[in-house]
Length: 272
Image (tube, rainbow, N blue to C red):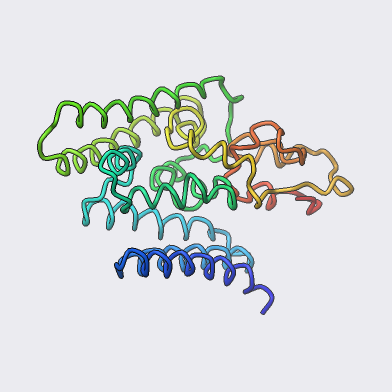
């Protein structure tokens, strides 16, 4: 029964969010939406505890496909950063704005960049590529993410300044085009740098929100120095190049951790 506690705790947290939004927004969709995501995450955590090899991938596919196919393609919601800017400009606290608030702005204070590891529909596809462990040193290209961040804001601002018509249709089409572009760029970068997560490290604009809050995240991978033998396996296994042997919040690439637990699984001394 003790193994069920972590999953149950996560599910309870999501249910609190689900019920709160349902009652405050008077919309049953939010109850069903966050309950589904909570169940998916809780299932993944439980499967990991029971040592199922593809536990994280189960959650990643359940949540990622739901966000991309149902919310994006079926319901026509732009769940990318452009959708978030659109909500801010219209002053509406709806799907994309709620998604960003929970997953990428305030949520990371609790679970860091866990969204990137368990729910991102872009990374969901990229993680199927062959370079799960980076084969080249990390490049100093992180500044590109700030350019894509600004460009997304400028794009939406320009639509409002020019009083573009059919805004909802434009946002839906930008969601389709944006996803295709993200996948294309992500795949090209993965093969060029031999690193599945190159897009996440250098291009993704959402990380501009994720990184500051992730610095203060309550959930963090920590190292038991008394057990660590400095074998370097955790560093080689980490898809985000995080130095897990350093417990400082200023550790190398500390705000990049996606809680994938690859370092934990590969440690021969259970030091993490």
